[in-house]
Amino acid sequence: MPDALSKTIPIWCAVMNRAIAKRFPSGIPPEWETNLFTPPASVSRQEHYQIEKRIDQWAEGLVDSEYELPLLAKPVRPIWVNPSTTVLPSFSGSQHFIPLICLSASKQIEEGLERRKNGFTYVQGSGDDHELWGRYTNPPSTQAIPSLRIIPEG
Image (cartoon, rainbow, N blue to C red; front, top):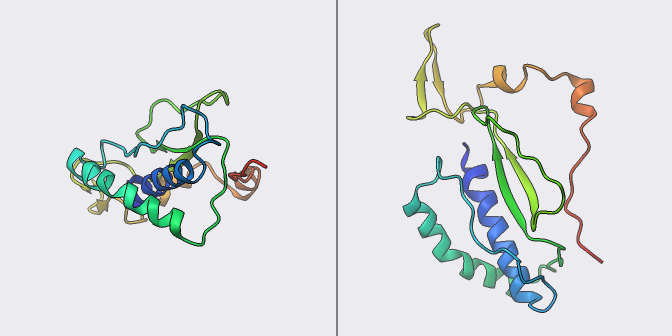
């Protein structure tokens, strides 16, 4: 899974959730989630812990910046989907977070490298896996997918 999906987006979710909690302490529900969520298959416990230690500092920096933080109705939380996902997530709207789907077309392999029968080497995350993500798509099917936006309350 690319670092952008396994680390960068989770970091921003945690930073934004903590910054909102610091900026609007009386405006958020008690179940407001501020934890860092990373995919354990892609981010080791040690790396997760090292990132987690810095989230408060980054959240403080965001609160102290000139950026106008939106008061969201719920915290954002990353959810990962890749070709090895066997059950797609289902959301009813009753969960206590806004799901941010991190979709990777890359096949997840143990060492990040795989020899293929045709003599080619598959390098995970190198962007050469169009055969996986493009198989069932065409312009009309991709145009039918509605845009997703996080809209602040108020």
